[in-house]
Structures are given as structure tokens and as C-alpha cells.
Length: 377
Image (cartoon, rainbow, N blue to C red; front, side, top):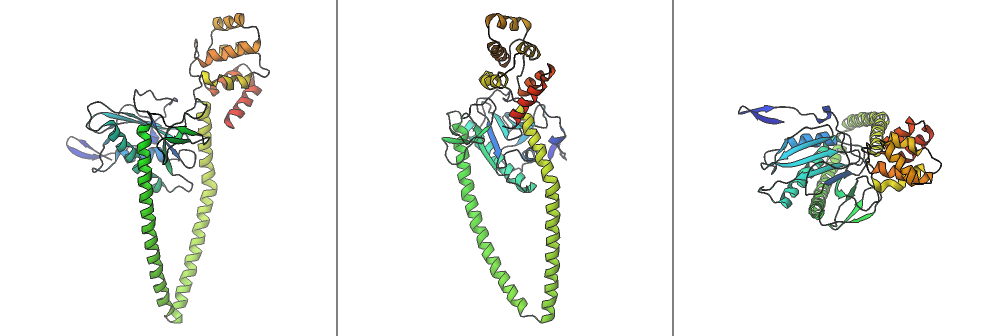
């Protein structure tokens, strides 16, 4: 990339993968009026290398681009903040295990309207992702799709709902539930539909042009073969030997590719799978998840008080729950509700915190059972 230092153009390198990762919560701490844009991928997870390469692409855009992206603030391996354009507009790009998240802060006084600014952001991201994905040559499906936060599922964990050609509807990327787009997200949905329609027309024209060149190439190849058949037998034998050599080389190359896929792709898939599981275990729970949490503990568990202390609930609160509720299961439910509401010293309730707390009071079998059920979802 290039920057100006003392009126001189200086080349420099930026490697997001060398930065420390940030503990990114379920919601961004950016104060914005525009809802976040989500980017998911056909393979079901964020392809390895996409985030870092996209960041570098955005910073290294050519001079003919409408927006100029610059680094701003404290950046991490999985969270990069940009100052975009000349009016101090801010864009935060967050990488998660199964999707990318884009938060936009459009400043007052900008020459571009909020609608036009979002249009340019979407266009830059689309071009960048197309360029990056093509250059990385993935062997699995990696097509990117735009969407918004899904509200069609009864879960507190954020995930995308994909928008394609209907600006008023989106489909959940996990359960295929249909979501109706609210007024806030219409800003993104209209532009995503326009972009998808434009891409579809462009792809159709590209396919038509490719087919035309393909048939022309077939005709040229047919003429070349006819000319070769008219050559003498000695030349024919020489070409035949050359063809055999090329065939042998192709077979050898394919075998090498197969060997690489056999050993490298499973390892990469395992790493991604582990990252997805860890993100699920560390997602923040809320009071909406009380029925699920209570259901996993309510069968035979009665050590609600030691567990409550490990979860950060004070002894006074636990004593009040004991005096107000007679049944053990009711006490357990009230204690869990206090934890999910972050009462006393309870902070950031997660599945991992619950599992670790159970292990601390030596309820290992129950902790392992809950972890198995959560990670298998």
C-alpha cells in the first residue's frame, strides 16, 4: 500500500493477521443509527484469509474509487475500523466464525447522503470480496451473500438473514425461516436487491460472451486438427508422443492436488469448526434464554446455591431467593434469572461460564453433557 510522508509517496505493508484478536461481543459498541450489514458465505463459515485480504484490498483501492479507506483507532485481527472519505465517516468491519459484520457511522455534513454513502460502501465491499475470493482459489463453495440481522429465530445469538431479489423479505441463513424486513433495514435491502439484479445481468452477459469465445475456440481447434491430420506420419507420431507426455503430466498434477486436499483441507475444516464451536460457547446469553438454560439443569440438579456463588450471585441474593421460594426447582430458576440479568457480580453470562462453574463445584458429568448438547446444535 502507499501513503504520503513528508510529501513523498512511501510503500508500506499492513498484516491484520499479525494483530492480537479482540474479544468481540454479540453487539458492537459503535453508536450508529444505521443497522449493521451482514456478509455470509455459501460454505456456511467465513473462509480462511478472506477478512485479512479484504481489509488490505480496501486500503489499497485505486484512485478512481469514490471512497478512500484509511485505518482509524485501535485495530485487532478480527476487528478493523476505517475512516472513509473526507468527512470522517466511520466503518467498522468485524470478522466472526460464520459471517462478517459491517457497522457504518455516517457523519452529518457529508456531501453524500446516507443512502448514497451506504450504496458506495456496499459496492466497495462487493468488488473487494469478488476480487479476494477469486484470487484465493478456494476448492469449496465460497460465494458471498449480503443480508441483515435475523429476527425470525427465537435465539439471542446474532446471525444473518440473506437478502437476494425481494427487498421486503429475507431468509435466515441457519433455519431458512422467512423474515420480513423492517423500516430500518430497508436502507440495505433495497441496495442489496439492486446490486444482485445488476450482478445477475452482468453474469448473464459474461456467460454469453464466454460461450461465444468457446464456440470460436472449438472452430479454431477443429481447423488445427484437420491441418495436423494432413501432415506426414512421422510428424503425427511425434505429436502423439507429446500428447501422451502431457496426459501423464496432467495425471501427476491431479494426483498431487488430491494429496494436498486430502491432508490440508480436513485440518483447515477442523480449525474453522473449532472456531465456530468456541464462538457459540462464548455468545452472550440473556433472560430470553432462561427456558433453555433451566431445561438443561432442572432434571435432577439441586445444588443451586453453590452454582449461584460461582456464577457471581451474592450470598444475600441467594438467601432472599431461598426465603421466597419453597421448591428447589423454583429457587434454581430464580437464581438463573438473576445470573442472566447480570445481577450482583454476574457479568457476561455465557454457556462457557456455566460449564466452567459446574466443573468448579465438581459437577463434571453434568457440565460435559451440557457442553455436548450445546456444541452439537
